[in-house]
Each structure stands twice: as structure tokens, then as C-alpha cells.
Length: 203
Image (cartoon, rainbow, N blue to C red; front, side, top):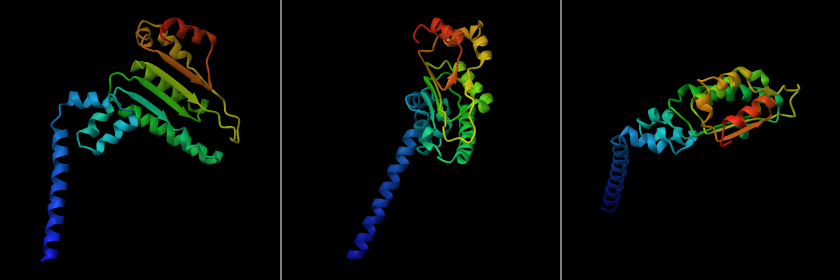
């Protein structure tokens, strides 16, 4: 008799647990897209992406996040320079994929931090263009130099083409939104720095 009661109790608890999970999923699924998008906008890219496990609808909404795109991958540093090259390629592919999926009209922050050099110029140029197009309020590029590399890395140069675009009637409105600019291990001319300081009143 005791075993039967215990088994019944366990089954009841399982059903109760399943009910709570279904209730949570149902509650989320009935929220308007506008509210979900507002919630996601306060999250970082990693937090927003992780919400996809809560409900099927979330996995299609996180790309609309307008919060922080913090793409800091420096914690994955490899001591072996050969493995570092593998990680560099993986990191660049990851960033490109995130930007390709992102559908938000704006972002608050765009942060890139990894061991990259001029050999990845094509991708980095596109990342800068992305941040400008999304009217990022904070732009941070930290392209660390790995001293253990078997070859001397050539530092990335801030693209002159981007500078020319920002001076145009199309680009100038976007740069007005910039409040914080951080360029580490990036070659940038005095002319470009002067332009940012004069064009961004909050920098």
C-alpha cells in the first residue's frame, strides 16, 4: 500500500511540473512581439541568444536585439600560435554569422576584442560599417597583439574608405550617435581622430 501511495505521489508531482512548464511556455507564447523585443533589447547578445531555449518564438526574436553586441572572444586565447590561427578564423566566422543574423535597426554597443591583424582587414572593415549603419552609441575595437606568434603581425589600419563615407551626407548623420570610441591596437591617422572629435560631440 505504501509503495502504491509513493508512486502515485511521484506521478502527481511530475504532472504538476509538466503543467508549470507548459504554463510558462504558454505565457511566453502569448506575449506580443513588441514586449518580447523590448525585453530582449536590455540583454547582451549572449543573453539574448540564450533566451531561445525559453520558447520557440524567442529564437526568432533575439536577432532583433538593440542592446549590446559584445563580441569579446579574448578569453579563448590559445598559447600555441598555430592553434591561435585556428581560433582567429573561428572567431571571424562567428562574428560574421552574428552580424548576418542581426535584424535590429540600431544597437547601443558594438564591441570586438580578439587577437586579429591586418590579414582580416576585409571582415573588420565590414564590422565597422555594420556598427555605423546600426548607429552604435559605443564602438570598441581591441585587436590584441599576440607576442608569441611565429610571425610579426601587421596592425590593422582604420579604413580610409569608411572615413570618406562618414564625411558624406549619407554617413555623417550616423556618426552623430556615437558617444564612446575606443580603438586599441588599431592604426589611425591624426586626421581621422580629429574628424571623430569634431563630428561626435559626446566622444
